[in-house]
Length: 359
Image (cartoon, rainbow, N blue to C red; front, side):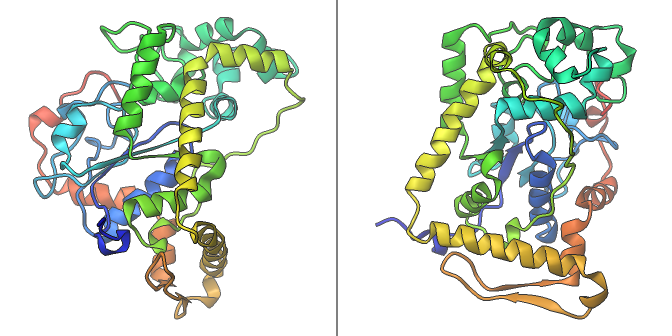
């Protein structure tokens, strides 16, 4: 007989592949907080860098030594690099990532990375103009001599709008040294998708973010308190007019690996949902209520200093409370605290050796 999931310990060993513009900072904040309050060991970038070597494959020169001799959590921007990650993480590590509808992802990247300015996109509707001439503007953006790209931590030759989710998840798009662009190799694409299907323990879908978090909580055997969040690095922007359907179809062909990835794991998510216990949707509704109450409580700073929110036990989670201290941790940039802890560890020379990556 299978062991009931509630009797198993929570999952502490996690690799979260932080895909760009896929609610990734919000998710990283959840993983950082989980490890921080439990004093777990993180794979952290060297010096003050934000990325674990991205967009290069992970190697030992890109991260700091463990404070305990082993690692529990990897959750900063990096490329999915197997088997190196398997070598440095415990055997029971779960691999997690999040993905997004590719067109919505492209729009977010277009604005966040200032592709209009860097790529010199003209016209009254820059996004439509960009979609009409994808190869032209992407080439300008990626050009070696384009100084307008500085400050965005994106090197020459790397597209942030064409199959870029797949790139973060280790698919060879031709950027990495010694690799060929395999985006038109149907066999290579399918083998990569099959590898992800076997290796990834859970893939969140941004369009169903809170529901995905409930599924993540169940996968990791965490409590509801562990997945509370405040959104990070969100942006608002307007699309001046409805995008022509033909342009959408053209983009789907141009970035087709991202679409294949999204379609596969969107289906997988709903298959997993269908396998859940009868109280799954009750938990989703409860999580929505808990989130709203927590945000209201944490935003009412003048009235909560000596107060706390109490949440009773549910079939899926132990009872817990939210205090002013919890609010501070939820809101705080825990990465700064982690860096301070790891700055006390003397970094061997091999961990400082870099190859031009500065972000």
